[in-house]
Image (cartoon, rainbow, N blue to C red):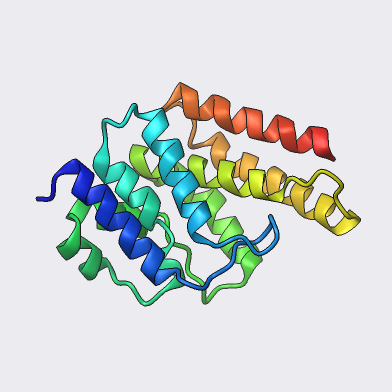
Length: 179
């Protein structure tokens, strides 16, 4: 098994290479890797850096969903736990957006404790990316819609880490203040 530092570094490297050229929704055309870095950083802070596999999974949480990366590849390169956490956080992109969202709400209670933390960190990052200082009507509507849905997902993911729960509440409060 890789050391904690190598595990996280190699996860960041793979995430950067696989998401190369991808742009993030919100915040203009910010590189997608910034989202992955933010999720990993939130998880590292929430756990005091005590769970390298969780932080690595934070870096990689969208690789199966957005790239040709496989569970087997992640299990071989990192660990079975990292690969399983990424799979738990992966949406079926063949489904329409509304159905993917519905399934996230329904599936969230059955996620592992660690996958729930990734989900919360992901929602914090996505809410923060949608906050604009002078939003258009479309941006305002998108933020309100996303926050409402994210609250449904996070409602059943809470309780595993008080710091992360509070960070989510703070992001929602910032979002609502910007509406």
